[in-house]
View 1 (cartoon, rainbow, N blue to C red):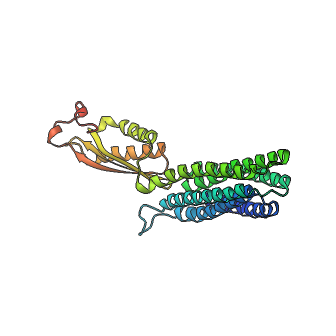
View 2 (cartoon, rainbow, N blue to C red):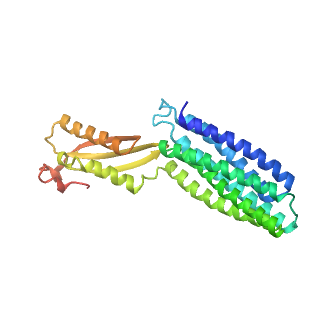
View 3 (spheres, rainbow, N blue to C red):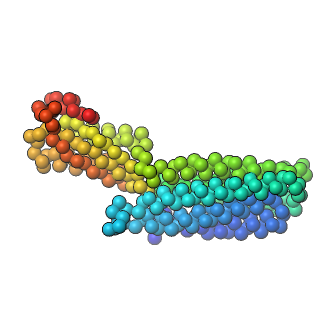
Length: 302
């Protein structure tokens, strides 16, 4: 089974257990911050399920209907997860505001503190595993799921701190205040995730550092061509796509030009994993009809 699928399944198991545990403790103690964490974990569980199916689909090879592969399913998953977090955050703020106005007191804050600390401890290790696999496989879906769990770590610790302060001070209004603070924090993370996941769906170019690697790789073989232009890049899941026009002297043999293109493609795949390169060969036009290895600068990067 694909490593990404195994890791996504682990996230589902973890979130299922924590959601049930937080829900039961939240109902028993009457803590809106714990109930908000249960809602947060429920969103994480839904997100983990979406991640599980998206990585299964995205790992499929290209087919007749999807000639560029299924990578964008992961990007769609990231957008859906961000929207779910956004909705959960708004719901938490509304419910916490109601509790702040009503002034209802909690039950056992010690039990709530213990559960929240345990939740943070478990999610810390699960999120670290998700991040590790996400970076290894360049998986947007797993990266988004890891972010969910990482925010769950912070929010659980925040709730635990709030419950601990309530236990010491007996100031029960701290519970909904902590819940609102956590919701705002989660909301900010959701907006950042939405931006990151949405960009590949509208074919935003690769990062400046990746483009720098691409241009440096092309320049390694500059002694064999006159110049290049129309460089375009985009990303789909863990796949990077690069296409460009490479200009050669009009009298160069086709095989020699093709060999240079092969060398560039091979070198680029070593520098950037999962990169597909499409190079269009061009002959110098009338403006550089005398283009040769000695005056190739006349048409480079035009």
